[in-house]
Length: 594
Image (cartoon, rainbow, N blue to C red; front, side):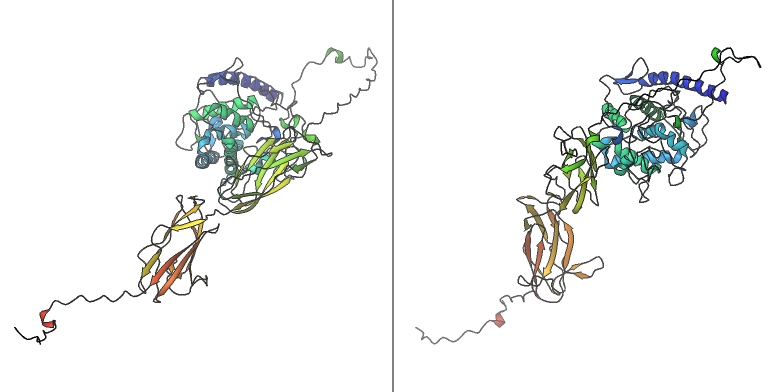
């Protein structure tokens, strides 16, 4: 065991040396503004951006991570999934299912947030640092880890203090939160960042497809462009707020960009160095006061020479000095911690937000305001308030996210970003909660209404004709406007009514056809296009002659009537005859001749 421990110490020392050399070597291949300082840490020509994301608002809660750096020589990409043979290949290769999850997440983010420019190699770098690629790819066929990956409890003892937020559902801990899964999300972050990446209807932090997609969306929030080094650094720091973490992730990112290969699931190697291990050669993450003894593998110290004061005497010989009882230890009382502003929050109050209503596709005129107060009703500034969009809705905050965190001002008020209504109508809820404080949340009700138009006009004739049993040659086309402007995506209802005095659906006369060719006399679910135009399907006539009304209506009160006539064509008028034999005969004149 002692030999094993010595090997671990030697490996830690080598890891520390290699880390400095590797980062310095990698700096030459980084973006043009990235260099390395004298300690091998990456810097930029400007100050390296830091994240103001507190532990409770980050992805991982600033949990420990693996500090191992990539080998200096990147492996060549392999086209197959065979067992790697190059030195360090199992360490640098990525298990097949895990790699597939990263690439699928990149593809989805390219579609959903193209301006983010998320590379799958960034997800791979974070996955390597957070869990060693799901512990070397120990996942089942669906991408769920074989056994849960759970970090140490964040109880403030050497780590951030984050009390339980999920009743132990994800981490099995009902007292404190733990980071969970291959991308190490804390439950409070997963609650809003979680995604269903494999289409099974669940959002599971232990599934590599779900976790990779959630990590991609997390890194792409705030409209960050990850092709920009400053935004990339900010995004990584928001995942785990540590400069050492940033450097380690950037090192693996560059390594994977140079090339990697796929290895079979379960054959990857697990990293050794840990940020909470004093032998790993990395500085602890800010906010930690020391190592967590429970997170390291137990070890046995090597034998050492006993101190002179403890040198044994010969058997049977009296001790040269009688033993004395040790003095009782003096207990030093722990200083009472100074309460933070968050600790003083007793409740949240609505800071005057009312009437949250918007038309589909529009931005809400009013923003949500929340005030943090003490028990006495005094304002509490510098408190993080999290706003979360809940319910069956596609409404989001500006930027497309359903969560936003804002710090209260000196008046104790936090104002959420503007809400943007989606196309889905109906009511939903925005909940405000105090980050790091278990006080009741505050709910705001919001409603999205249909798009409206106040005017409908026909782009063609308002009277169409057809013979009994035939079809109308022209199709009805209309344009919708609202206060003179084009009204797009407005729902239009078309009904063939009996009369203006009896505006109910007619049971005879003109009709539309459904997909089965059956007659229908009311159409719903039709919308105007981007130009406010709508063309209705072809109209047909039964054998009943007459004059009919097609009535079109929209939300907002616009109404338009189109007249339809069904009649046999008029008998043609005969042309005058030119045959002389049919001309009337001349009458004899009765006038006397001259």
